[in-house]
Length: 215
Image (cartoon, rainbow, N blue to C red; front, side, top):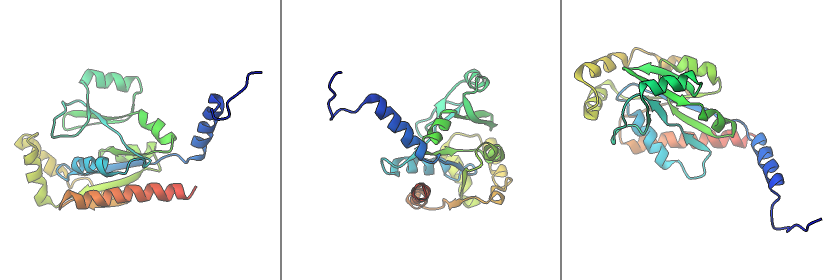
């Protein structure tokens, strides 16, 4: 029988230990972030991506969207309408919806991340929230808001919508009362991003720590 070096891990044993470790970790939680156009949701998420400490069990899901990527916009994965439909047909989307002439989706990779104990932050749709809640009953809803007088100048500064599109977005902003779903956190993003972003990052870390501390 060949000798074994006590300083080398047995690959099979290491694999079993890794599986056992994942089995002891509670499933991660979906953090579903919504907010009307102009609330600064994308800016808030970008801030959190940069400031969540390395090693924290928190990941941010990219969205698949049928529009081109802009240097000053959301860091999404751009796909054609045809490719999006193909991904939906083959079950590659955990969630998907249509809004403002585009299609949006969250890939099925988030299921693996959640299973491995990671909290997954997604940029969601207010209208899709009831369906998301059915699929992920333990999700945490985070609502980003801003005073009405800030929404228009923020939308105009993006340079992405026509005046008609901006008017439609502003009309839609107060139409959906997501607060009736009792969000776990509401962030009023009406000042420096460091304030709202710091509040969001603190929430993510507190939630992750509290859940794992209860194991």
